[in-house]
Image 1 (cartoon, helix red, strand yellow):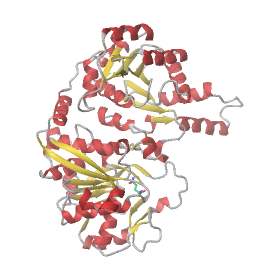
Image 2 (cartoon, helix red, strand yellow):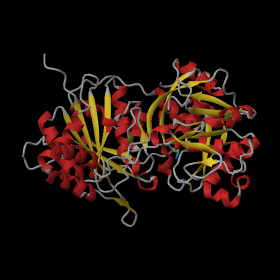
Image 3 (cartoon, protein in one colour):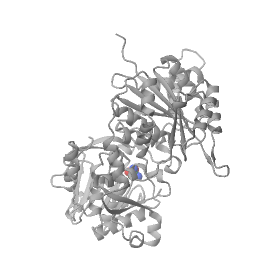
Length: 553
Ligand code: GLN
Protein backbone atom coordinates (compact mmCIF):
# COMPACT_ATOMS: atom_id res chain seq x y z
CA UNK A 1 0.00 0.00 0.00
CA UNK A 2 1.41 3.44 -0.85
CA UNK A 3 2.26 5.51 2.20
CA UNK A 4 -0.14 8.31 3.06
CA UNK A 5 0.45 11.57 1.18
CA UNK A 6 0.36 14.83 3.04
CA UNK A 7 -1.86 17.37 1.32
CA UNK A 8 -0.65 20.96 1.00
CA UNK A 9 -2.39 24.29 0.84
CA UNK A 10 -0.38 27.34 -0.19
CA UNK A 11 -1.73 30.76 0.68
CA UNK A 12 -0.44 33.84 -1.11
CA UNK A 13 -1.56 37.45 -0.83
CA UNK A 14 -2.02 40.12 -3.45
CA UNK A 15 -2.76 43.83 -3.98
CA UNK A 16 -1.83 45.11 -0.50
CA UNK A 17 -0.27 43.86 2.71
CA UNK A 18 -2.20 43.52 5.98
CA UNK A 19 -5.03 41.63 4.32
CA UNK A 20 -5.23 39.19 7.20
CA UNK A 21 -3.60 36.23 5.46
CA UNK A 22 -2.50 34.81 8.79
CA UNK A 23 -5.96 35.03 10.24
CA UNK A 24 -7.47 33.49 7.12
CA UNK A 25 -4.93 30.65 7.19
CA UNK A 26 -5.69 30.06 10.87
CA UNK A 27 -9.45 30.14 10.25
CA UNK A 28 -9.11 27.60 7.44
CA UNK A 29 -7.04 25.40 9.75
CA UNK A 30 -9.72 25.60 12.43
CA UNK A 31 -12.42 24.54 9.97
CA UNK A 32 -10.38 21.66 8.57
CA UNK A 33 -9.56 20.47 12.09
CA UNK A 34 -13.22 20.61 13.00
CA UNK A 35 -13.86 18.41 9.95
CA UNK A 36 -11.62 15.85 11.57
CA UNK A 37 -8.30 16.44 9.81
CA UNK A 38 -4.91 16.89 11.42
CA UNK A 39 -3.49 20.22 10.32
CA UNK A 40 -0.11 21.94 10.63
CA UNK A 41 0.66 25.50 9.69
CA UNK A 42 3.76 27.28 8.55
CA UNK A 43 4.75 30.76 7.48
CA UNK A 44 7.49 31.56 4.97
CA UNK A 45 8.69 35.14 5.41
CA UNK A 46 10.64 36.76 2.58
CA UNK A 47 12.68 39.19 4.74
CA UNK A 48 16.40 38.66 5.35
CA UNK A 49 16.49 38.57 9.18
CA UNK A 50 17.05 34.97 10.26
CA UNK A 51 14.05 35.35 12.56
CA UNK A 52 12.06 38.32 13.90
CA UNK A 53 13.68 38.00 17.36
CA UNK A 54 16.09 40.87 16.75
CA UNK A 55 13.47 43.21 15.27
CA UNK A 56 11.78 46.01 17.15
CA UNK A 57 8.09 45.43 17.87
CA UNK A 58 7.50 48.66 15.96
CA UNK A 59 8.94 47.00 12.86
CA UNK A 60 7.29 43.69 13.13
CA UNK A 61 4.79 43.58 15.96
CA UNK A 62 5.16 41.03 18.73
CA UNK A 63 7.65 38.18 18.60
CA UNK A 64 5.70 34.99 19.20
CA UNK A 65 7.57 32.23 21.06
CA UNK A 66 6.89 28.53 20.54
CA UNK A 67 7.33 25.68 23.02
CA UNK A 68 10.58 24.65 21.35
CA UNK A 69 11.95 28.17 21.68
CA UNK A 70 11.53 29.58 18.17
CA UNK A 71 11.15 33.36 18.01
CA UNK A 72 8.60 33.76 15.28
CA UNK A 73 6.15 35.89 13.37
CA UNK A 74 2.98 36.87 15.21
CA UNK A 75 0.85 35.03 12.67
CA UNK A 76 1.92 31.85 14.44
CA UNK A 77 -0.04 33.17 17.41
CA UNK A 78 -3.14 33.15 15.22
CA UNK A 79 -2.36 29.60 14.15
CA UNK A 80 -1.97 28.32 17.70
CA UNK A 81 -4.92 30.25 19.08
CA UNK A 82 -7.49 29.50 16.41
CA UNK A 83 -6.59 26.04 15.34
CA UNK A 84 -5.07 25.01 18.69
CA UNK A 85 -2.12 23.49 16.80
CA UNK A 86 1.40 23.30 18.16
CA UNK A 87 3.89 25.39 16.19
CA UNK A 88 7.63 24.79 16.24
CA UNK A 89 10.94 25.84 14.69
CA UNK A 90 9.62 24.30 11.45
CA UNK A 91 6.64 26.65 11.41
CA UNK A 92 8.50 29.81 10.40
CA UNK A 93 11.26 30.19 7.82
CA UNK A 94 12.70 33.44 6.47
CA UNK A 95 14.92 34.20 3.49
CA UNK A 96 17.74 34.72 6.00
CA UNK A 97 17.28 31.31 7.57
CA UNK A 98 17.09 29.57 4.17
CA UNK A 99 20.27 31.31 2.95
CA UNK A 100 22.04 30.61 6.22
CA UNK A 101 21.48 26.88 5.72
CA UNK A 102 22.55 26.97 2.09
CA UNK A 103 25.66 29.04 2.83
CA UNK A 104 26.69 26.76 5.72
CA UNK A 105 26.31 23.80 3.38
CA UNK A 106 28.35 25.53 0.70
CA UNK A 107 31.14 26.23 3.20
CA UNK A 108 31.17 22.55 4.19
CA UNK A 109 31.65 21.67 0.53
CA UNK A 110 28.33 19.81 0.28
CA UNK A 111 27.63 21.10 -3.23
CA UNK A 112 30.63 19.25 -4.64
CA UNK A 113 32.04 22.06 -6.72
CA UNK A 114 28.75 23.20 -8.22
CA UNK A 115 27.80 26.86 -8.67
CA UNK A 116 25.25 27.55 -5.91
CA UNK A 117 22.24 29.42 -7.29
CA UNK A 118 18.82 30.72 -6.31
CA UNK A 119 17.31 28.08 -8.58
CA UNK A 120 17.67 25.24 -7.74
CA UNK A 121 19.59 25.52 -4.45
CA UNK A 122 17.60 28.18 -2.62
CA UNK A 123 14.28 26.93 -4.01
CA UNK A 124 15.22 23.36 -3.04
CA UNK A 125 15.96 24.50 0.50
CA UNK A 126 12.58 26.25 0.65
CA UNK A 127 10.98 23.01 -0.48
CA UNK A 128 12.85 21.13 2.25
CA UNK A 129 11.36 23.59 4.74
CA UNK A 130 7.86 22.86 3.42
CA UNK A 131 8.47 19.11 3.38
CA UNK A 132 9.77 19.19 6.95
CA UNK A 133 6.18 19.31 8.21
CA UNK A 134 5.08 16.19 6.28
CA UNK A 135 4.60 13.01 8.24
CA UNK A 136 2.25 10.40 9.67
CA UNK A 137 0.97 12.86 12.24
CA UNK A 138 -0.57 15.28 9.75
CA UNK A 139 -3.14 15.25 6.95
CA UNK A 140 -2.94 18.81 5.64
CA UNK A 141 -0.10 21.35 5.82
CA UNK A 142 -1.02 24.99 5.29
CA UNK A 143 1.86 27.20 4.16
CA UNK A 144 1.39 30.95 4.16
CA UNK A 145 3.78 33.01 2.03
CA UNK A 146 4.44 36.35 3.69
CA UNK A 147 4.51 39.59 1.72
CA UNK A 148 2.60 40.49 -1.40
CA UNK A 149 2.77 38.89 -4.83
CA UNK A 150 4.89 41.16 -7.02
CA UNK A 151 7.54 41.81 -4.36
CA UNK A 152 11.02 40.95 -5.65
CA UNK A 153 11.93 39.12 -2.45
CA UNK A 154 8.92 36.76 -2.64
CA UNK A 155 9.98 35.32 -6.00
CA UNK A 156 12.07 32.35 -4.81
CA UNK A 157 9.25 31.32 -2.45
CA UNK A 158 6.65 31.46 -5.21
CA UNK A 159 8.92 29.52 -7.55
CA UNK A 160 9.46 26.93 -4.82
CA UNK A 161 5.75 26.38 -4.21
CA UNK A 162 5.15 26.18 -7.97
CA UNK A 163 7.74 23.40 -8.19
CA UNK A 164 6.44 21.73 -5.06
CA UNK A 165 2.88 21.49 -6.30
CA UNK A 166 4.10 20.34 -9.71
CA UNK A 167 5.78 17.45 -7.96
CA UNK A 168 2.91 16.44 -5.65
CA UNK A 169 0.14 16.97 -8.23
CA UNK A 170 -3.03 19.03 -8.26
CA UNK A 171 -5.01 16.61 -6.09
CA UNK A 172 -2.43 16.99 -3.34
CA UNK A 173 -1.67 20.69 -3.44
CA UNK A 174 -3.82 23.78 -3.72
CA UNK A 175 -3.06 27.43 -4.36
CA UNK A 176 -5.26 29.88 -2.47
CA UNK A 177 -4.80 33.55 -3.31
CA UNK A 178 -6.11 36.25 -1.00
CA UNK A 179 -6.73 39.64 -2.59
CA UNK A 180 -8.49 42.90 -1.95
CA UNK A 181 -11.56 44.06 -3.86
CA UNK A 182 -11.62 47.72 -2.83
CA UNK A 183 -14.74 49.86 -2.67
CA UNK A 184 -14.23 53.17 -4.46
CA UNK A 185 -16.35 55.79 -2.81
CA UNK A 186 -16.29 58.21 -5.74
CA UNK A 187 -17.43 55.54 -8.18
CA UNK A 188 -19.64 53.82 -5.54
CA UNK A 189 -18.32 50.54 -6.85
CA UNK A 190 -16.26 47.53 -5.88
CA UNK A 191 -13.26 47.21 -8.16
CA UNK A 192 -11.94 43.83 -9.33
CA UNK A 193 -9.04 45.10 -11.45
CA UNK A 194 -6.35 44.97 -8.73
CA UNK A 195 -7.23 41.32 -8.10
CA UNK A 196 -7.10 40.56 -11.83
CA UNK A 197 -3.65 42.12 -12.02
CA UNK A 198 -2.41 40.29 -8.96
CA UNK A 199 -3.54 36.96 -10.41
CA UNK A 200 -1.88 38.05 -13.66
CA UNK A 201 1.46 38.40 -11.83
CA UNK A 202 1.01 34.97 -10.27
CA UNK A 203 0.18 33.47 -13.66
CA UNK A 204 3.41 34.93 -15.04
CA UNK A 205 5.24 32.94 -12.38
CA UNK A 206 3.38 29.79 -13.38
CA UNK A 207 0.81 29.71 -10.59
CA UNK A 208 -2.90 29.74 -11.30
CA UNK A 209 -4.85 29.99 -8.05
CA UNK A 210 -7.38 27.23 -7.43
CA UNK A 211 -9.30 29.39 -4.99
CA UNK A 212 -9.53 33.16 -4.83
CA UNK A 213 -10.51 34.71 -1.51
CA UNK A 214 -11.57 38.33 -1.88
CA UNK A 215 -11.40 40.67 1.10
CA UNK A 216 -14.09 43.31 0.66
CA UNK A 217 -16.10 45.85 2.63
CA UNK A 218 -19.32 45.07 0.75
CA UNK A 219 -20.70 41.79 -0.62
CA UNK A 220 -19.68 41.00 -4.19
CA UNK A 221 -22.39 41.13 -6.85
CA UNK A 222 -22.86 38.41 -9.51
CA UNK A 223 -21.08 40.59 -12.07
CA UNK A 224 -17.97 40.71 -9.86
CA UNK A 225 -17.89 36.92 -9.62
CA UNK A 226 -18.29 36.70 -13.42
CA UNK A 227 -15.52 39.19 -14.11
CA UNK A 228 -13.10 37.71 -11.60
CA UNK A 229 -13.75 34.22 -12.88
CA UNK A 230 -13.22 35.23 -16.50
CA UNK A 231 -10.00 37.18 -15.97
CA UNK A 232 -8.49 35.09 -13.21
CA UNK A 233 -9.31 31.67 -14.58
CA UNK A 234 -10.95 30.57 -11.33
CA UNK A 235 -14.38 28.90 -11.27
CA UNK A 236 -17.09 31.18 -9.92
CA UNK A 237 -17.90 28.94 -6.97
CA UNK A 238 -14.24 28.97 -5.98
CA UNK A 239 -14.25 32.74 -5.61
CA UNK A 240 -14.94 33.26 -1.94
CA UNK A 241 -15.82 36.59 -0.44
CA UNK A 242 -14.38 37.48 2.95
CA UNK A 243 -16.40 40.52 3.93
CA UNK A 244 -15.12 42.69 6.81
CA UNK A 245 -16.57 41.25 10.02
CA UNK A 246 -18.80 43.49 12.08
CA UNK A 247 -17.86 42.82 15.67
CA UNK A 248 -15.00 40.47 16.28
CA UNK A 249 -12.36 38.63 14.31
CA UNK A 250 -13.71 35.40 15.80
CA UNK A 251 -16.46 35.71 13.19
CA UNK A 252 -14.01 35.04 10.35
CA UNK A 253 -14.07 31.20 10.58
CA UNK A 254 -17.86 31.15 10.71
CA UNK A 255 -18.10 33.44 7.71
CA UNK A 256 -15.70 31.29 5.70
CA UNK A 257 -17.66 28.20 6.75
CA UNK A 258 -20.83 29.86 5.51
CA UNK A 259 -19.12 30.41 2.16
CA UNK A 260 -18.31 26.67 2.27
CA UNK A 261 -14.61 27.33 1.77
CA UNK A 262 -13.61 24.27 3.82
CA UNK A 263 -15.90 22.02 1.77
CA UNK A 264 -14.40 23.22 -1.51
CA UNK A 265 -10.87 22.74 -0.19
CA UNK A 266 -11.57 19.18 0.90
CA UNK A 267 -13.32 18.32 -2.35
CA UNK A 268 -10.45 19.69 -4.44
CA UNK A 269 -7.99 17.69 -2.37
CA UNK A 270 -10.09 14.55 -2.79
CA UNK A 271 -10.78 14.29 0.94
CA UNK A 272 -14.05 13.22 2.51
CA UNK A 273 -16.17 16.12 3.76
CA UNK A 274 -17.10 15.17 7.31
CA UNK A 275 -19.67 16.84 9.56
CA UNK A 276 -18.63 20.02 11.30
CA UNK A 277 -19.53 21.25 14.78
CA UNK A 278 -19.09 24.93 15.59
CA UNK A 279 -21.58 25.47 18.45
CA UNK A 280 -18.86 26.34 20.94
CA UNK A 281 -17.44 28.86 18.50
CA UNK A 282 -20.87 30.46 18.12
CA UNK A 283 -21.21 30.68 21.89
CA UNK A 284 -17.80 32.35 21.99
CA UNK A 285 -18.99 35.04 19.60
CA UNK A 286 -22.06 35.55 21.75
CA UNK A 287 -19.83 36.02 24.79
CA UNK A 288 -17.72 38.60 22.95
CA UNK A 289 -20.58 40.53 21.40
CA UNK A 290 -23.17 40.28 24.18
CA UNK A 291 -21.43 39.38 27.43
CA UNK A 292 -23.67 38.56 30.39
CA UNK A 293 -22.07 40.85 32.91
CA UNK A 294 -20.54 44.17 33.47
CA UNK A 295 -17.72 46.10 31.89
CA UNK A 296 -14.24 45.54 33.22
CA UNK A 297 -11.43 47.89 32.30
CA UNK A 298 -7.83 46.74 32.41
CA UNK A 299 -4.84 49.00 31.90
CA UNK A 300 -1.91 47.66 29.89
CA UNK A 301 1.08 49.81 30.80
CA UNK A 302 3.69 49.35 28.10
CA UNK A 303 6.18 51.01 25.88
CA UNK A 304 4.84 49.99 22.48
CA UNK A 305 1.18 50.81 23.16
CA UNK A 306 0.76 52.90 19.99
CA UNK A 307 1.03 49.72 17.95
CA UNK A 308 -1.65 47.14 18.74
CA UNK A 309 0.31 44.32 17.14
CA UNK A 310 3.19 44.83 19.56
CA UNK A 311 1.11 43.29 22.38
CA UNK A 312 -1.05 41.05 20.19
CA UNK A 313 -1.03 37.95 22.39
CA UNK A 314 -1.52 40.01 25.57
CA UNK A 315 -4.64 41.69 24.19
CA UNK A 316 -5.97 38.40 22.86
CA UNK A 317 -5.34 36.62 26.16
CA UNK A 318 -7.18 39.40 27.99
CA UNK A 319 -10.09 38.90 25.61
CA UNK A 320 -10.01 35.20 26.44
CA UNK A 321 -10.18 36.13 30.12
CA UNK A 322 -13.25 38.23 29.34
CA UNK A 323 -14.82 35.35 27.43
CA UNK A 324 -14.16 32.86 30.27
CA UNK A 325 -15.80 35.18 32.78
CA UNK A 326 -18.55 36.28 30.37
CA UNK A 327 -17.78 39.94 31.07
CA UNK A 328 -17.28 42.87 28.71
CA UNK A 329 -13.59 43.57 28.65
CA UNK A 330 -12.11 46.94 27.75
CA UNK A 331 -8.36 47.45 27.48
CA UNK A 332 -6.87 50.84 28.29
CA UNK A 333 -3.41 50.94 26.70
CA UNK A 334 -1.20 53.40 28.59
CA UNK A 335 2.18 54.68 27.44
CA UNK A 336 4.49 54.04 30.41
CA UNK A 337 6.46 57.24 29.82
CA UNK A 338 3.26 59.25 30.24
CA UNK A 339 2.91 57.89 33.77
CA UNK A 340 6.37 59.26 34.54
CA UNK A 341 5.14 62.74 33.56
CA UNK A 342 1.52 62.75 34.65
CA UNK A 343 1.50 60.30 37.54
CA UNK A 344 -0.07 56.88 38.00
CA UNK A 345 -3.13 58.06 39.95
CA UNK A 346 -4.31 60.27 37.10
CA UNK A 347 -3.75 57.87 34.22
CA UNK A 348 -4.87 54.75 36.06
CA UNK A 349 -7.95 56.27 37.65
CA UNK A 350 -10.94 53.97 37.50
CA UNK A 351 -9.23 50.88 36.08
CA UNK A 352 -10.22 47.51 37.54
CA UNK A 353 -6.83 45.87 37.02
CA UNK A 354 -3.34 46.66 35.80
CA UNK A 355 -1.12 44.56 33.56
CA UNK A 356 2.54 45.32 32.95
CA UNK A 357 3.78 43.28 29.97
CA UNK A 358 7.27 42.25 28.86
CA UNK A 359 9.79 44.55 27.23
CA UNK A 360 13.40 45.45 26.65
CA UNK A 361 15.43 48.59 27.28
CA UNK A 362 14.97 51.28 29.90
CA UNK A 363 12.50 53.62 28.16
CA UNK A 364 9.31 53.75 30.20
CA UNK A 365 10.54 51.41 32.93
CA UNK A 366 10.10 54.00 35.70
CA UNK A 367 6.49 54.50 34.55
CA UNK A 368 5.89 50.78 34.74
CA UNK A 369 7.34 50.72 38.25
CA UNK A 370 5.00 53.56 39.27
CA UNK A 371 2.04 51.64 37.85
CA UNK A 372 3.10 48.58 39.85
CA UNK A 373 3.35 50.66 43.04
CA UNK A 374 -0.12 52.07 42.37
CA UNK A 375 -1.54 48.54 42.03
CA UNK A 376 0.21 47.31 45.18
CA UNK A 377 -0.72 50.25 47.37
CA UNK A 378 -4.34 50.45 46.25
CA UNK A 379 -5.18 46.75 46.21
CA UNK A 380 -5.81 46.80 42.45
CA UNK A 381 -5.53 43.35 40.79
CA UNK A 382 -2.16 43.15 39.04
CA UNK A 383 -0.47 40.83 36.60
CA UNK A 384 3.20 41.40 35.77
CA UNK A 385 4.70 39.52 32.86
CA UNK A 386 8.45 39.06 32.36
CA UNK A 387 9.74 42.65 32.55
CA UNK A 388 6.45 43.25 34.42
CA UNK A 389 7.57 40.84 37.14
CA UNK A 390 11.01 42.43 37.21
CA UNK A 391 9.36 45.85 37.72
CA UNK A 392 7.29 44.42 40.58
CA UNK A 393 10.48 43.13 42.23
CA UNK A 394 12.27 46.48 41.81
CA UNK A 395 9.27 48.36 43.20
CA UNK A 396 9.03 46.06 46.21
CA UNK A 397 12.76 46.42 46.89
CA UNK A 398 12.59 50.21 46.72
CA UNK A 399 9.33 50.96 48.50
CA UNK A 400 8.78 48.05 50.87
CA UNK A 401 12.32 46.99 51.73
CA UNK A 402 13.92 50.42 51.61
CA UNK A 403 16.53 49.72 48.90
CA UNK A 404 16.30 53.20 47.40
CA UNK A 405 18.30 52.72 44.23
CA UNK A 406 17.23 49.12 43.53
CA UNK A 407 17.15 48.27 39.85
CA UNK A 408 17.71 45.66 37.20
CA UNK A 409 21.24 45.47 35.88
CA UNK A 410 19.69 45.78 32.42
CA UNK A 411 19.00 49.43 33.25
CA UNK A 412 21.65 50.34 35.82
CA UNK A 413 24.83 48.30 35.80
CA UNK A 414 26.16 50.09 38.91
CA UNK A 415 23.02 49.82 41.05
CA UNK A 416 23.67 49.17 44.76
CA UNK A 417 20.76 46.75 44.90
CA UNK A 418 20.80 44.63 41.71
CA UNK A 419 17.57 42.79 42.52
CA UNK A 420 17.33 41.64 38.89
CA UNK A 421 20.59 40.52 37.32
CA UNK A 422 21.92 38.75 34.26
CA UNK A 423 21.43 34.98 34.28
CA UNK A 424 24.68 33.09 34.77
CA UNK A 425 24.55 31.32 31.39
CA UNK A 426 23.89 34.64 29.64
CA UNK A 427 27.16 36.22 30.78
CA UNK A 428 29.33 34.68 28.04
CA UNK A 429 26.87 35.28 25.21
CA UNK A 430 27.76 37.90 22.59
CA UNK A 431 25.33 37.22 19.71
CA UNK A 432 21.90 38.79 20.10
CA UNK A 433 19.84 36.50 17.85
CA UNK A 434 18.21 33.40 19.38
CA UNK A 435 20.36 33.45 22.51
CA UNK A 436 17.93 34.35 25.30
CA UNK A 437 16.42 31.81 27.66
CA UNK A 438 13.75 30.68 25.25
CA UNK A 439 10.83 28.30 25.00
CA UNK A 440 9.05 26.05 27.43
CA UNK A 441 10.52 25.36 30.87
CA UNK A 442 8.97 23.51 33.81
CA UNK A 443 8.04 25.39 36.95
CA UNK A 444 6.96 24.18 40.38
CA UNK A 445 4.34 26.19 42.23
CA UNK A 446 4.33 26.71 45.99
CA UNK A 447 1.72 24.98 48.15
CA UNK A 448 -1.07 27.26 49.31
CA UNK A 449 -0.19 30.04 46.86
CA UNK A 450 -2.67 31.89 44.65
CA UNK A 451 -0.70 30.64 41.67
CA UNK A 452 -1.33 26.99 42.59
CA UNK A 453 -5.01 27.73 43.16
CA UNK A 454 -5.23 29.50 39.82
CA UNK A 455 -3.56 26.75 37.84
CA UNK A 456 -5.27 24.02 39.86
CA UNK A 457 -1.98 22.11 40.03
CA UNK A 458 1.61 22.60 41.09
CA UNK A 459 3.60 21.46 38.03
CA UNK A 460 3.35 23.75 35.04
CA UNK A 461 5.28 24.48 31.84
CA UNK A 462 5.45 27.97 30.43
CA UNK A 463 7.28 29.79 27.63
CA UNK A 464 10.15 32.16 28.28
CA UNK A 465 12.06 34.91 26.49
CA UNK A 466 14.47 36.78 28.75
CA UNK A 467 18.11 37.30 29.75
CA UNK A 468 17.70 38.67 33.27
CA UNK A 469 16.36 37.00 36.41
CA UNK A 470 15.46 37.52 40.05
CA UNK A 471 18.60 37.82 42.23
CA UNK A 472 18.43 35.10 44.88
CA UNK A 473 20.50 37.18 47.35
CA UNK A 474 17.31 39.09 48.10
CA UNK A 475 14.95 36.13 48.38
CA UNK A 476 14.84 35.72 52.17
CA UNK A 477 14.59 39.43 52.81
CA UNK A 478 11.70 39.87 50.39
CA UNK A 479 9.85 36.83 51.74
CA UNK A 480 10.15 38.24 55.23
CA UNK A 481 8.64 41.50 53.99
CA UNK A 482 5.56 39.81 52.48
CA UNK A 483 6.51 38.63 49.02
CA UNK A 484 5.61 35.03 48.22
CA UNK A 485 7.97 33.20 45.90
CA UNK A 486 5.14 31.20 44.36
CA UNK A 487 6.92 29.51 41.47
CA UNK A 488 10.46 28.34 40.87
CA UNK A 489 12.36 26.11 38.46
CA UNK A 490 12.02 22.49 39.72
CA UNK A 491 15.47 22.64 41.39
CA UNK A 492 14.40 25.81 43.19
CA UNK A 493 17.12 27.99 41.66
CA UNK A 494 15.21 30.35 39.39
CA UNK A 495 12.33 32.46 40.66
CA UNK A 496 9.55 32.15 38.07
CA UNK A 497 6.54 33.58 39.93
CA UNK A 498 5.92 35.96 42.79
CA UNK A 499 2.81 37.23 44.57
CA UNK A 500 2.03 39.46 47.52
CA UNK A 501 0.59 38.24 50.81
CA UNK A 502 -1.39 41.31 51.75
CA UNK A 503 -3.07 42.04 48.46
CA UNK A 504 -6.29 40.75 46.87
CA UNK A 505 -4.62 39.58 43.63
CA UNK A 506 -1.05 40.59 42.84
CA UNK A 507 0.70 37.96 40.73
CA UNK A 508 3.72 38.22 38.46
CA UNK A 509 5.62 35.73 36.34
CA UNK A 510 8.97 35.62 34.58
CA UNK A 511 7.41 33.69 31.67
CA UNK A 512 4.85 34.63 29.03
CA UNK A 513 1.49 33.03 29.77
CA UNK A 514 -0.16 34.99 26.95
CA UNK A 515 1.30 32.64 24.34
CA UNK A 516 -0.63 29.66 25.69
CA UNK A 517 -4.05 31.26 26.06
CA UNK A 518 -6.83 30.11 23.72
CA UNK A 519 -10.25 31.64 22.97
CA UNK A 520 -12.06 28.55 24.24
CA UNK A 521 -9.57 27.86 26.99
CA UNK A 522 -8.35 31.07 28.57
CA UNK A 523 -5.02 30.91 30.33
CA UNK A 524 -5.71 30.60 34.07
CA UNK A 525 -3.69 33.72 34.94
CA UNK A 526 -5.64 35.88 32.49
CA UNK A 527 -8.90 34.22 33.45
CA UNK A 528 -8.34 34.99 37.12
CA UNK A 529 -6.93 38.47 36.55
CA UNK A 530 -10.19 39.36 34.78
CA UNK A 531 -12.22 37.58 37.48
CA UNK A 532 -10.40 39.56 40.17
CA UNK A 533 -10.98 42.77 38.21
CA UNK A 534 -14.69 41.95 37.95
CA UNK A 535 -14.92 41.17 41.66
CA UNK A 536 -15.74 37.52 40.87
CA UNK A 537 -14.30 34.73 42.98
CA UNK A 538 -10.78 33.58 42.14
CA UNK A 539 -9.76 31.01 41.24
CA UNK A 540 -12.54 30.75 38.71
CA UNK A 541 -12.34 27.00 38.74
CA UNK A 542 -15.72 26.15 37.23
CA UNK A 543 -14.30 26.97 33.82
CA UNK A 544 -11.76 24.19 34.07
CA UNK A 545 -14.16 21.57 35.38
CA UNK A 546 -16.68 22.53 32.70
CA UNK A 547 -14.17 21.73 30.02
CA UNK A 548 -13.10 18.59 31.83
CA UNK A 549 -9.44 19.35 31.43
CA UNK A 550 -6.89 21.66 32.87
CA UNK A 551 -5.22 24.26 30.73
CA UNK A 552 -2.91 23.10 27.93
CA UNK A 553 0.30 21.77 29.44
N1 GLN B 1 14.34 42.68 29.31
C1 GLN B 1 14.06 41.66 30.27
C2 GLN B 1 15.02 40.48 30.17
O1 GLN B 1 15.69 40.31 29.19
C3 GLN B 1 12.63 41.20 30.14
C4 GLN B 1 12.35 40.46 28.87
C5 GLN B 1 10.89 40.37 28.55
O2 GLN B 1 10.07 41.06 29.15
N2 GLN B 1 10.54 39.54 27.59
O3 GLN B 1 15.10 39.70 31.08
